[in-house]
Structure formats: structure tokens, C-alpha cells
Length: 82
Image (tube, rainbow, N blue to C red; front, side):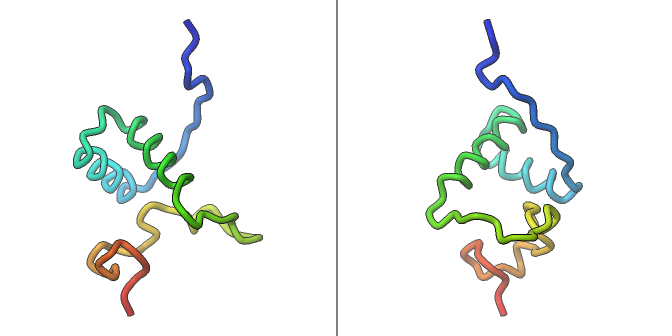
């Protein structure tokens, strides 16, 4: 029987990104990192207002933490507070 997920995608994550992924995975009782990544990808693609990347955007601009710690966020998970 063929695997329904078929294609393999390998990504490199920073230690911080892996920690954040694992924290999210455990808090949502996901069975594996792969299932957590698939769920986050599904949610991200389904999000309202998801647009195309700006021309010339670099892949390093799209990390999970993106250099902003939770304490610096605006309290709603949005952009950093001023």
C-alpha cells in the first residue's frame, strides 16, 4: 500500500524553533513532530489574509520565532509590542 503522504520534505530548524515546535506539539497532544508540522502548515495555509510572499523575501525571514520572544509580543500572539 502506498504512503498517502508520498513526498518527503526535509527542513533545518534552529534549536529554538525545535523547542517551540515541541512545546506546541505537546500542548496540543500531537503524536509526532511530523504531525505537528503538517497541522501547523495546514493552519497557516488556511489562515485568513494569507498572501503571497513579497518579491525578494529571504527564507530566513520566515522562522517560527523570527527573533521575537513571547514576552515581547503584544499579548495576542501578534507583532512585537512597541
